[in-house]
Amino acid sequence: MAGADHVFEELSEPDCLNLLGTNQVGRIAVVVDNRPILFPVNYAMSADEVVFRTDTGTKLAGAALGHVAFEIDGIDEQTREGWSVIVQGVGFEVTGSLDLESEQLKNLDLQPWVPGNRTHWVRIVANSITGRRLRRVD
Amino acid sequence: MRAVDLLGGTEIIGEADCWELLETEIIGRVVATIDGQVEIFPVNYAVEGEGILFRTNAGRKTEGALAGETVFEVDSVDRQAKSGWSVIVRGDARDITEYDGPTRADAVMPWTGPKDFLVRISARSISGRRVVPVQTT
Image 1: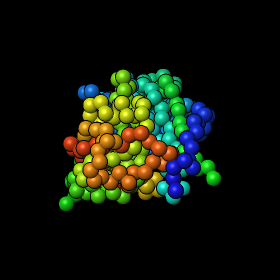
Image 2: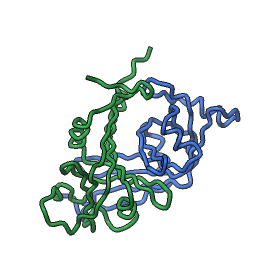
Image 3: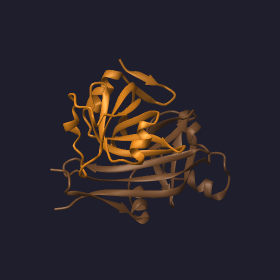
Image 4: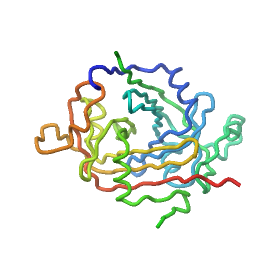
């Protein structure tokens, strides 16, 4: 059973980036009108940055030029092992930006899963990328 | 009947269905604002009445969750089908470690050794969204 036979290990930043690069769906948390809210989003990585698309609703209002947290995780319910990676940073909308980097971001293969006008591209400039792994010790 | 949010392209999940979905998962995420910074903490949880139980050690998670409104999220995503759902519970978190009445506390045994606090988020609202596969043409 679970309990003392599981330990938490800190993940290195390269390990975190590797996990970010091999997943497709994460959760973005933003504060809108002093209330936190969280949304699942599909995302892509551009170098070390998380990029996602959104419409003009709450997500964009909170994410653009605001503090954001982004989370991915993977859990094995059988072994009760798992990991999570958290990116803390600031969201920048790059939809209208014409610089080379922004243009490259908007060429990422990032198809929205839902119909609608997900015409806004947001990149997260990270202040910190941290992760933990919950590992079983036999 | 299906309610569809045309702007977001997602289907709205009714309250009763939201609670049923919460029973199908064991890991959720507590979202808390700490010093103006939003934080996300994965936790294992149990549903009790119209509330969520989870355990935590003292620290940022507890402080953040107990101060003001707490947001709790559970989701399930099918990467192949590009579909999934997400349920959000908003409510007030209380430290019920000392409460000795009947709870489903046994259902949230910690995965990583003893946890100091048992916290209950009493739902003030619950809402959910479902993404159904997009027909690409």
